[in-house]
Image (tube, rainbow, N blue to C red; front, side, top):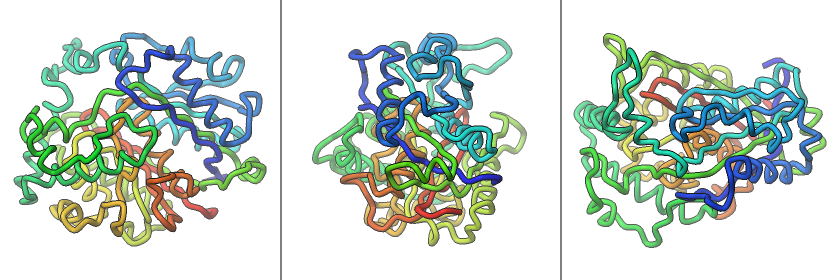
Length: 385
């Protein structure tokens, strides 16, 4: 890392099934203005804008960034779009931070968004493009066999996913921005919800959401002028691998393990479970929490489900995971990864409100996308690297 980078502003919209009260430009502007207010800045103080969203087919609007520049104060400034499927929010944050770390810019605004209500994400996932294999069954149909494979390999009890879902949905009740809130949610309620793609039940599944998230990354000198406490970027990492190749392990992808190893090496972390205080992990289906606990090195292979059973990932556990309610509770796909990064920074800055974990000094943000082929992660702390 050539220069230091810090998060000095965070803004989120309310996530909902349909944000019919705002247009697409209005949605991203809402998040951006809140991030600027948090940093006590205006659009004039921003040097460049980085924007990320999921594939254009999810909304049926091709290259929306072309008409969003003015809404984000980006007219006449460098503006970059990032595209790494569902992990794009995390990748967008990493690109923004890298532009600061390289010394190119002092302050960079990054925004991730999605307005799924204006199209049909399920259709977008089932379309058969030329020279490609059609997924046909949507995201759940693609990932359910991988979860079954994980259960066979690890011997995880069948109710592990239910336990994760109950935890995340209880956490969401403390998050004012969360889309899905189920007061009094119970184990039995999740267990008795309809089975969509065996073993994935309805309440173990993420929703389709509208929403946007914005963050401002700043140089060390710019962070010194910020009114709030910065969250210092200690390390970032991205990895990818093809969707299909002989011998590919989709339960514990090589790219995921390589990403984690690179991240911890850069952050000088040797025992992630002991050295990281909390984590926001991309979990669109509840079973992916124990699976990612293993690929991220928080548990030995085949042991991730035990963290759920032991209560380790509860908000009062030794490694709280998805304190915000996670992707299970809000899923504007293009923003979902950036929300994980934002929530990790909020924990470090002590601004997470009712879902704040006491004494957080170091937090991890995680995103993945495509057919478990793109991974982006970062670590932030309350002190300089």
